[in-house]
Image 1 (tube, rainbow, N blue to C red):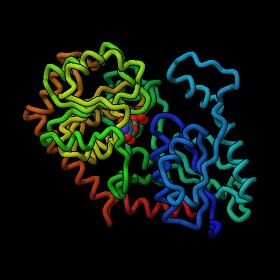
Image 2: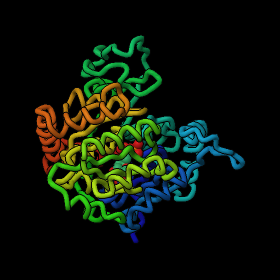
Image 3: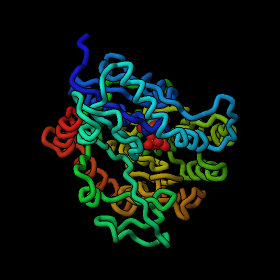
Image 4: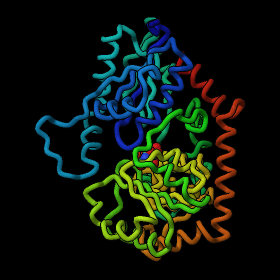
Length: 408
Ligand code: UDP
């Protein structure tokens, strides 16, 4: 095997939620277009094991997974708080990434020529230097891929719109992630950063060749009428609270909507036991679905989602309108985009699932003029996304530029 020798790209991943997987997808696209570059993928051991287990070694020949300290002390007893591991990891930063970078430089004997990250950059180009150039040289080729470029700014009132940021006048303060953080618009970012390159969605550009469907979801969907099924999933981290799960189940049963539900939290499955017995011919509850393929199946008419970014983007790729119930982080902003700006989905009255609010949202998507318009709008957005990743599309052009930047 030829040893990559024309540069060393260190990719720093955030190991929670579905952050690392799309960053690895992008890294794989870059690495297959630049086989002479060496890529080191720095991430926690747990997340690395998860994301690399889903791809074949032949698909990442010049990418090496490198584990960094997750910040969890040896004798640590978890309290059960969902964000505890995140807190510990953040506390271990940037030292854990700095140590990881030192290690990959020592192990490979190759300096880092480009630092690439999927979240706010906390580690600066201290380990760079191309062909013996100084730290400053490394900073020149620092490619910051901003999935979440946050800028601190105080806001007094949740309903205040962000009209002081170009292009953000339709976003309200309360749509933003917690902690009064602001996601600048693309226009604003362009004025602040030297280069802003929007790329993707990669699943549209090169759809995965295979998928596993242990629960037979696609076979089940194939038996249903076009646009008749409600698909439910709340991503990889959260499960809605008990009262909302019950309300959701009641609404699905009352509306007699066929449903496919990705339900990961087995400790809460007993809450739905009686409902599942009554609805065994109406719906299917499984621990995991091949979501991309589910959303591309013509029988799916609505996606009930927490509005995680990957889910939103996959729903657009499938042309499926959404019912959004955001919980935290960027989900409120994504939901606002889906419901009010792009008009490709509905929210639930009051912001939480109740039986009547969910029934109303289902009615809107399935049987109203507004729902029909949502379907049209999402079709237009899907076509735009397809065009972006097409031969002369903006994503394809940006990707080529990114490749040049990363290659140094
Ligand atoms: N996913 C899946 N099958 C499931 C549930 C989730 O394939 O049954 C995938 C989904 O396709 C998406 C990711 O998990 O790519 C969830 O990412 P998202 O950003 O929506 O939510 P997060 O898990 O980060 O909260």
